[in-house]
Image (cartoon, rainbow over all chains, first blue to last red; front, top):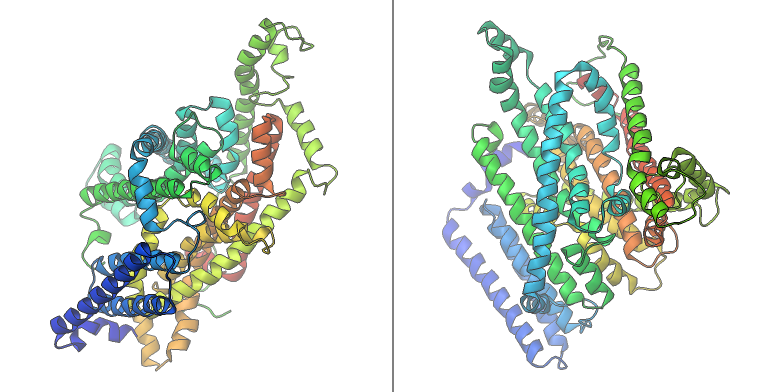
Amino acid sequence: MALERRKGPESKIPHQTLFAFTFYAGITICFVELLRTINALATAPDNTSNAQVWVIWIFGLMAALGISQVARTTRNFLPALLTFILALLFTEALLRVYKVPPGLIPTPSRVWTALLSTQQVLLRDAFTTFVLEALFGFIGGTLAGLLFALSIVRSRFLERGLLPYASVLSSVPIVALAPILVKMIGLEWPSKAVIVGITVFFPVVVNVVRGLQSVGSLQLDLMRSYGSSGGQVFSLLRVPTALPFLFNALKIAVPLALIGAIVGETFGAAGSGLGFRIGISVGRFEYDVAWAAIVIASVISLLFFGLVSLLERRFLNWHSSMREGA
Amino acid sequence: MTRALGTPTRIPRAPRPSSAGPILLIGLVFVLIYLASVPLLNMPQAQKLLSSGADLGCKSALECAFMLRNPTVPAPLQLLEGFKALSWPLFSPTGVPLNLLITAGETLAGIVLASVLGVLLAVGMVASRALERSILPLLVASQTVPIVALTPMLAVTLGQFRDLPGWVPKAIIAAYIAFFPICVGLLKGLRSPDPLSLDLMRTYHARNASIFFKLRFPASLPYLFTAYKVAVAAALIGAIVAEGATVSFQGIGKMLSENSRAADSVALWVIMLYSGLLGIGLVALVGVLERFITPWKREVN
């Protein structure tokens, strides 16, 4: 297995461009067929035929096969993108052809229209949830976690006394903490920011401590033989070693921050916020709006994650994990 | 249990200084902070009630801070009474222990489901690069999605199937949250044996199955257990949130949302402490299993 892999599947295909072209063409045909079926179903929703069911399944499966062939030879994000588009088209077509009531599961296109029509409200919700709650909480939790980790590394006593608490408390479900914090601090956004801060705090502490301590003894000896001061050892050796760990923690913390904000809002919010919007839309049976809010939350989370990855690339471009093909 | 290739023989570790002293001391500091926060955080509320002329059966705000009906931070005696009221009789339907057990059951059912899904996907991705390239980026992207936001929708969708027993939707939601760490941890673990060991297996002319079971699988176990620690904690959160979002009559999540609406803060504190213990207990259980199944890892650490 390992040996075959090193050769790479690319070398097996002499007419690679022609090959790839046929597959791309096939996938495009499948997509177009699916789109045409969806269009037919949209114009005449009551006229579903067995033929359409067959068309959807066959072209869907063929597109999946085509994508798996493309995935063998491409290394970029294209296969994932194609899979995503296929999933959207397939869901839309299936939901329409089997006449699933839109009140139960709204089709992707319906969610899109809901997204456009409730834009204003959703953007305000997104501002509350992301900027006020998630971002402030994220920054606060990270800073507190860094301070905490630094003080733990500074003193053996704190390390032995505090670190066990930090690792034990990190497995406590924050959901149970949320109602108490909301009651204590109030319905406005600060209570949710605190919840987010607490969720972000623990991974940062645990990872940064591990990172600061993962300095090799050889490197320490080298620094010592250069006659470097404690401050130099810290800034030139410990901090660079800990940075990958910190970024790992931040990447873990991004979705946690959004989750913390949204869960916090379900226990009481002051009239705006994505979690609040989802809860209230489900209560009103407006599932398309609820899904639209979920889409917005996901997009924000993805962008936030992308931002953290970008910072990682900027500050860690020297690290071996950033190398091509690593 | 097969030992992983190249595991060192048992080397006695240098004795480390005991951590019991610092842990107890810091714990004491935490208790003191708690005791100080009771009057500090409750006084404003007590003062307001007193000045509004309510008869609380106490004279000063400081005294009242320890006996409010609905305190911000309950006093130790109130907490004890809350524990007694919610834990006794042991299996009463409104008590915490029974509901805790139900939530734990849903969490474990979710973990089982998540394991099946996660293992299937991970093994599939190790076997086929094409599958990995078309699915893994989507899986990673799906994890940046705040999954909890989906629970009300999933709860509604799954709630349509009325024949399902009540615990199934919660287990599915818990599994949906927990399968990713398992899948990615296992994938990383199965890829972790170094090329030298793999080449060695090939020079032995080992079949793929025996490479998998004798090298890849044992090598993946440490990663798998780390993943399970994350997954168990995540699944518990999923189960609690799902109980809050679905129509449920039992479970910690239902008790939380009920008492949150009734604003019974002592009960909320008691439930919080209990569910914290459950989370710690579940992760500790994984830790015990880890020590039992991968004894060689202790030397590596």
